Length: 539
Image 1 (cartoon, rainbow, N blue to C red):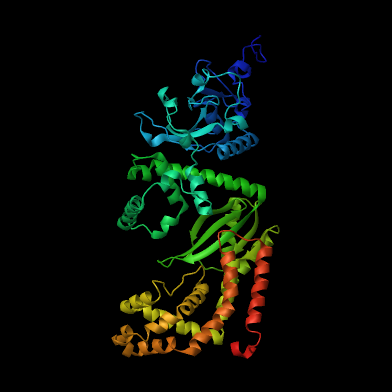
Image 2 (cartoon, rainbow, N blue to C red):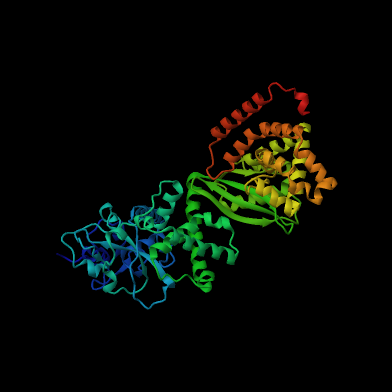
């Protein structure tokens, strides 16, 4: 066979079929082996750079976003999109994590997840490593990583980057371990409710689990970690990944957490933004603004971008020294829109304040293709505020606040209250300010009998607070039938709106027709609840 030649008549290795794997892997359209004696090295046809690590790392070079594989300077956006989608598709179909011992003395800071191929016809589970190993088992040409056949055989293995030895390519794990699901998949199953305990876990005794639980509890107590961190998805993934690693895992040092691992997380965040930016360009996006004040009295404005891919936090601006009028807010929002791209932002959402309304109108005049919408949660909060300002509801809300403030201000009374309510609290924090008031009313009504029992018990009558003016007022409120009747009226007026608020402020955002249907249902329920009462009652 004649050797491939270039336009000038010289030998061109880029077009030599012998320098490409007999495979349907798309990476070989743009890569080749510069050295036939070292098939672990792949050269890029586009930019000429050479990469160790085989075709997998070379595809990362074309896709970009990987710390150890620099993006090709000559790659087109079309090629980059092709390989980004290809790599993500492959990851979803790869098999599970397999822990494999590694005897390298190299520092493990540079660990990466590498795909190793399992020979299809090997009953002993032997692993085919780089191309030099693959050449020993080649009964016929077979598609490489990336095609459907090989995706079924791919395994993710924790292996440090660097030179691999022959001993490292040997499979040492059982079939059960090879088929193990990834930590992310295990946690997702657990959170979805479809999780079934493993056989190993069911064989553990209650004492063994109790011991592990206690160690984690001590960690939370000693380090002051908030208890709700235990419900975080990433915490559960970390636990599962550690369990799959096995005994002897050494956690990262403070230096590793503060330097290399932090830098890696920053790179991952940058990559995540690139994914979001592609979605903004493809679908369009919504810019959301949220103002709040911190404990230092600073007025901060957060900016977030929402698209079908999800919500991305852009940043925060300290606007404490600014006058929050319409022109200032419009200029601030326009600056954020320009940073995203005017052609990508189709809508902005802010709260329903008069200044934001005016700012939204200004922006729509400047950019005719833009729409301004008020925040649904803020609109509902304003509705609850107006309901709370009605004469019939304002008094019970004020009296309920007086009861909770008194109880939570005095430790012995608070302890006695929790004993009566079975450890439950009366104050219920909510997503918005006025929703908190109505949820607290609901909690008071739920524990009405327990509160009445508290204020007629010996614990109360024997306490000196029972003889104070504040104590007598709270005692009379709790034992007042009129108070509890007015609380029920408040709940009948607010409960339907609280249901809508919980939906619009939840993690899964509903479509507008769903919100409209919920609002129609809420209005109907409120009308039915007060159909026989005169409007003058609520004036």
